[in-house]
Image 1 (spheres, protein in one colour):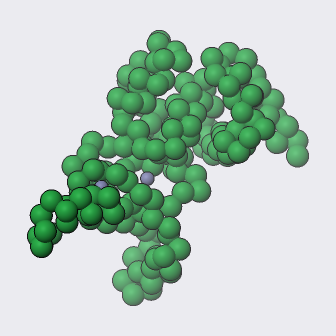
Image 2 (tube, rainbow, N blue to C red):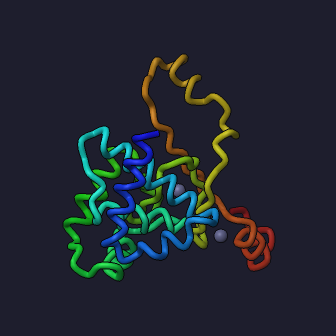
Length: 187
Ligand SMILES: [Zn+2]
Ligand SMILES: [Zn+2]
């Protein structure tokens, strides 16, 4: 309980010099606000355990990634961060992303034909369906894979594994338009 209060106090102090403090507080009552609050709280915890502080830059980059609800390239992150604070340098963004990735707070995705993209790692499935035509990305419900992780550990004695499944194909819209354009085409 005391830890929780200290975290809240730290976040409150941080928000005093955050440009997005008001947005965050205003959104706090709705779902996105609560998710944000939870994500920042648990990120703060993870950072602290590893001896890092939730600096204003780290907070800002985490917020940008969490609020996006989509994959962001480094250019998109830079643009959004610098809109809030133009003095955050590109090298700070690179270093921060590297740290957040190492701590498992941010996921770096390497999808076919794309530059690396980033997303919040908390509570999300890690598998993607990618459309070959429109590049739309869908998160795959990881319960579909059952206990694949455990099976791999049992059968292959391969431990501590991270599974990044990427399935490429055509989304329904693209599939229908392809069939329309080229009747009988074997894709
Ligand atoms: Zn598509
Ligand atoms: Zn993703």
